[in-house]
Length: 314
Image (tube, rainbow, N blue to C red; front, side, top):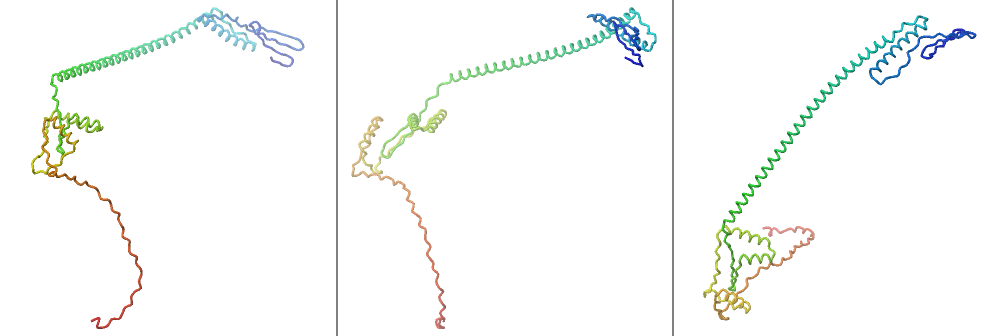
């Protein structure tokens, strides 16, 4: 709205046309109709039709702007182009836009197709590499299984051959060792491997059992040892021994009867010399060490010098 003294001007749009109202004092109203806009079309969903409609509306908007400027200056309105020319120009413009978009879309499609081909080639390459790796691993596994199978067959064959050779060999001869001891009473004691092992088992002597087993294993390869028979000297040079007790005599007679030997004659009691047992060593009792106590010393006064005679000195 513009006001100059008592005159007012007002611009408004009515039914698509611009109207200028001029009021003067006291009650004068003057209206002037300016440029009119094209009616608003119904927007279409088609891409090409929508582009043409937008182009027509932009062209009409530009003409309205220039017409309003000329009308306000009280200049003649610019010439308005016909609808056919506007439509032809808009159709050409829409076609240009579509061709540009089509070219950009085709370029994008070519880029996508190139990316697709590259991705497909890389996937195919990875698939081939993976397949080659799997094939190599399978071949390696089959080769290892074949080697293990061959080794198992070879070991079984070697074991069978060893068992066959062992079965062909004769059984080793049994070797027994015995130990004979004689006492002063004229009795002999003989122990074999079986008795020694039984005694060691009763005593719980593990080391002796192991030694017996090791000695028995060692005797399988070495020749059997010779067992010496006990020799009892019965000559007259040795002093006669006393007669044994009844229990000892019965035991000695039983052992001799089983072996088939006769007991030598026993001499008279007068000729018998009893054997004295060897003195057993007994350590002497330790004696207590007596420490010498130092004698007490007392201080004495010095003896005065006595003058001596000349004769004594001579």
